[in-house]
Image (cartoon, rainbow, N blue to C red; front, side, top):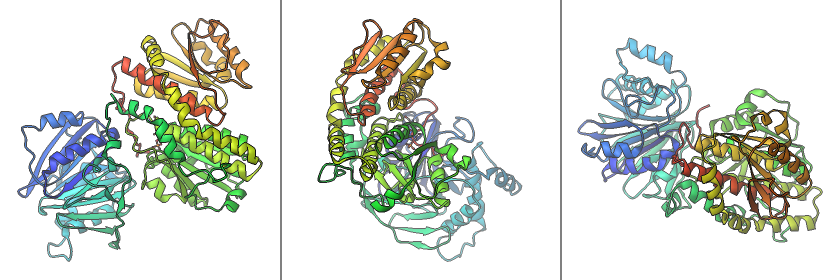
Length: 616
Ligand code: M6R
């Protein structure tokens, strides 16, 4: 939610910042803006709409300066207007600020600032924070030891309730930026004679792979020559400079039309990377390097709790079934946003998993902190290295699928399914799963990337179906057991990018209400595998057919469907049950993608959404 970029160095700041903002657009695209430092003041450009629009609008306005900050917005406080776009400038023209997060106590602060003569151009909480900083800056003694600007930021932030990733410039301090975080991500890029700040590595990766992942409560002070990191309490922090393992190519679309398309087709490789080095030498179980919990302690766990949001939550529903089936340990799955407030009774030996692609989802982070506060260990399954959830977790598993830029999760979701399947194996092998079942299970998982490759060859058939079904306004997605969460994921994918109403249900549940929706106007997407549920799912399909509902059936290769039961049949390869949800996900991703392309909608930046949701 909102992307921030800062630059200080020898190059033209606005050009570099706009390039960074383009890469952060997936975090929010309601408006964008840039401010640079020029001759003891600021040059400012901001505008509703995409970064491209801002670039066009600023072509005449040169935006000179080698120090600057920029922002791409996902609106929270105040509508989508030019005035509410960031950066904000304090009413005394001293401070320019960009902000990602929510200032919860802004109303009281605003009242106070109004009594002190500060004025406001926008409805945002950020402008309040910006003016509060201006207030503290003018109060700070000019001859104070250290930086007056930095001290004013520190004092301001001590009054703030809520979350922030901010970058600020002061008109009196040429070539300086102060930046701080609490609850919103912030990364410092250490380049060759230049520094960059960003919400995410993708904004700076074209200039440097050396980064410092800032922690909550840390403040970085940049000048053209060096940087220091301190805490809100004025303690010095020794920076750790990490090297990002991927390069700019991973964050670019290449020959694909959209990031979502690229990320769908990248899945075989992404899944190989998730598995790499994670099977035992004897090929009978999974190994995880970073769990930070001994096998003996893991063996004592009597209940696993999975907490997550959105697609990650769907992946937990699959993990639940696989762990219960193969390891016979009870699993609870909660929406992270609900877990925190439910106060559920927990057993002594419970262990938590927090699943989050971005590692910044505030609901998941808050739920994780709540579990830790109660004294439980929380392990993270997470894609973004150095993210807040990864750092605050007691251990975990990195997904290693590279940056996921399309707002609709694809490769991160199937990789979460894979990690869940590997955990079921790991826990199962500690209990009753035999050596030979373990060998068979590992072999099946190792075969997943090739099966995904094979399934991706269905793309032309699915595109054709999508073109014929894109005009429908409602869809049902139906499946049983592990294919029920895939049905939920299919429905979420379709609605989030194509804005078509879709619902996912366990196939048999359909007759308890949703069947009322069925008509020629509401197609059902059935996920069908061979095995114990096959005949039951056939009955559900018959019930739909009897009511003239159209059926798109995604069916395992060996299932024989009665002639004419399904209007469209998409055949996926037969596979082990731990692999099935991954393979079955590919067609629902492709279906949503091609329907959205047929409707000529913005696949990668659907309306109202943002890639990582950092507000509650
Ligand atoms: O980064 P996270 O995995 O924590 O994100 C959770 C959800 O916000 C995310 O999966 C969302 O539902 C996606 N837009 C789904 O495509």
